[in-house]
Length: 345
Image (cartoon, rainbow, N blue to C red; front, side):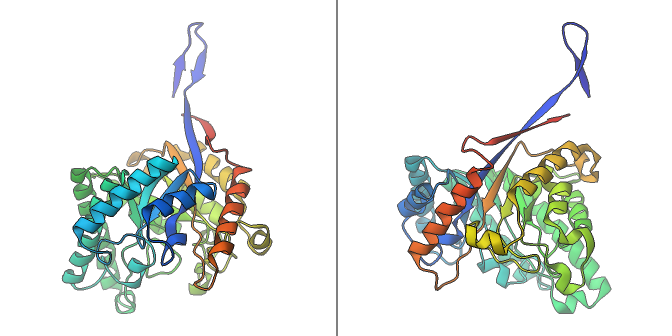
């Protein structure tokens, strides 16, 4: 696609994508409970962007509606106070324990849908308009039956289409579904991810549904997966252009360790931030070649969110030191004002 300048010379139209780094609030879980501390610690550790973790304020497990609204507003005020931007609200560990939206009984599916809808209210009170995560898992019984598995795929597509409509009505701008690494939590292959994005966004009258990529979610070799599906850079090359959030963690190829990016863990892990950025640039340069491009516009900005989940025995002083070291490391590649990726349209 081109345009003509005053002198008659044809020029390619440029598209600018901004890339930022931030922190997932999982580090707060079971440790801090006051919203002012959530945002103060985020800023003191060196982060301007915070992805709020649902385990810190859950629509089913944390008080009643009035408490949730009150706390979400306190989070919003604290974020403004410390100059932190809440990027989105993302599921933590809790929802990963259930079959949720993929349970064979519609009553269970409806209950998880209720969780998501109520979480949307928290999201909006918190001052953001994006919600993401993973809310389902196919059962062993379903996966052992081809017809039930096919039906489960169609069900999850329909569930997301319905959530997109509800989200748009409420004022949600996007819903994210996270790429995983076991066959029960789809999509766990790039083929499934492509099929998912097309199925849920084609003829979608609700808000867009996007994919979240995680640099530690390519451990499918335990279930026989091989090839490009096991390479985090391949996932980013294929889908990075439409990902508003990419979870980054230091890890080994066969696990999802959720380590910090410290000197110690960088020696043990295989994730390289420069490779993440290179793959993201490639994805934007080749966006129009992707089958899903007809149904989903490219992201205008992407947050590389450090998803660091500490073990229960890690002392708070050690944890905060690792978070600060991680921010300093990431800042070598991405300045606070963001990194620009410029591509031809």
